[in-house]
Length: 116
Length: 114
Image (cartoon, rainbow over all chains, first blue to last red; front, side, top):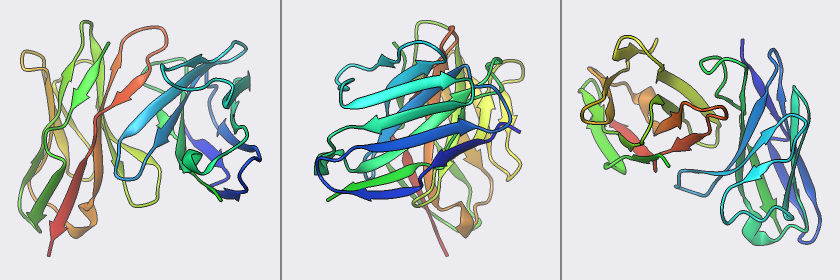
């Protein structure tokens, strides 16, 4: 149980275009989802926390207009990188949490975004 | 706010030798603690977690970690490592609150030498 599917696993896009990444909880209802960014050889940086049906809470320094997060249902959250630039190239990982603290914290397999 | 420190960025160890990966955290409230493993170009996998109860927690592949509240530590250990244990290991902490966001340490790269 507690499976999180993240799609796509890899995406290459042109500079200036937008890219959407999906995060789905397959067998549980995710009341909260988290989006992380990981730079090469670096740890994961929390970008934002999203709760179903409400606006996402962004961490300091993260541009909310650039990284649009939508959590429209209890099983799906999306991260849209708008007007992507090469410096947005990174590994993005989502995490979903269920109702019980010990039930969630399941991570998706990540999305490698390359902006050319 | 909570924070996590992993003092060793890289740990080389010979196959079948024991290993300890250190983790210390800082928080003003009670926390949950986790160890995650990441293999190259993959997502994170939960290795083990401490929520409450016994301070010694074990994973299915021979790793164990002990929660020490007085030292605010959650070190990861394995008595005999395999080549397949080569990976990046992240210690993480989550304050017990309504949103429980998980904050990661900088990671420790474990390299097992044949």
